[in-house]
Length: 271
Ligand SMILES: O=c1ccn([C@@H]2O[C@H](COP(=O)(O)O)[C@@H](O)[C@H]2O)c(=O)[nH]1
Image 1 (cartoon, protein in one colour):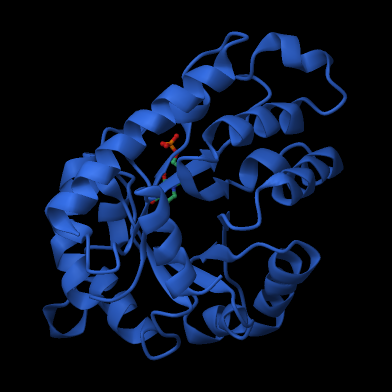
Image 2 (spheres, rainbow, N blue to C red; image 1 turned 45 degrees about the vertical axis):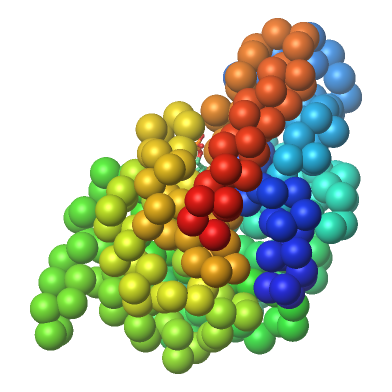
């Protein structure tokens, strides 16, 4: 999917919501456990009930690979079930020497037809570039993450007094463009999001950390929105586990709808 189409979908739905499919056998309603594929049965209902409000879905790969071959099968079925006009993100945080990254890219872009994958920048250009060679596919590079540990390395001063995340933003823009490169910026970073936006004015940000992690959607929009919206805001647990009963799909829909309404207001205010 190209940037123009993504922005068109955002405008059409008045939403920049990404629904995170972090589906955990220990957390899904117990009546689903008798299904042949409980993970897919759960995801199918979540997708059916939230697709009106979502412009992206983000399965976190850990939740699927933890289940072995069955988990990969559930992931593939989920990916096939997501409507084709909705952007898909493999939250896999890959990146290795070039020869290996190439195979990771083939796995997620060819074997599975994801639109994008999250990639860790730590190993540098040759670990990221193989993912950027695929047409119509996106790399979403970790820049300033939402977790407490982001302060261990990402904000440390490097040459010229620049924090490491700034180096990641500046350097990686020589490897890809705002047509194939996005950045992960955690919602928990508040006003610091404006600093990230300063160094990447035109790129889309994938923003996890609202909902269960407590980040503010208003602050994300205030500090991060650009003229193409430039934001995909993810909520996983806050939507998919809104209820642990038989009404989990309707409860997820209600949460997604609440976020979409707030996003429509924010698009008017800051867009
Ligand atoms: O900085 C980051 C990068 C990735 N994530 C992932 O996003 C979701 C967030 O889930 P919630 O339940 O909405 O908290 C999850 O898959 C994380 O692994 C992140 O949170 N922060």
